[in-house]
Image 1 (cartoon, one colour):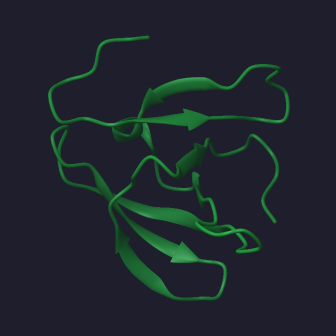
Image 2 (image 1 turned 45 degrees about the horizontal axis):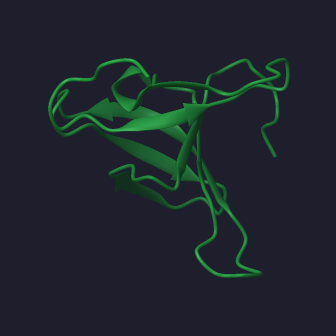
Length: 92
């Protein structure tokens, strides 16, 4: 697994073309990338949003996200977060 700066978290980055997901630092997210947060309970659907702005630094990455329901919020990614790179399909 690649080394990351202290305090930086890793997230899975996937695309429909990938056979195996790749992992990179969430600080590499860019405007237009999709944020997918998995459900926390059985039957709970995932939340999907688009990165509008990348905020914070390497030690505390966070984003301004526009969610599918139209809300905008500041989002601090966790272990349940997947970032899908812009232009890699699967926007729902």
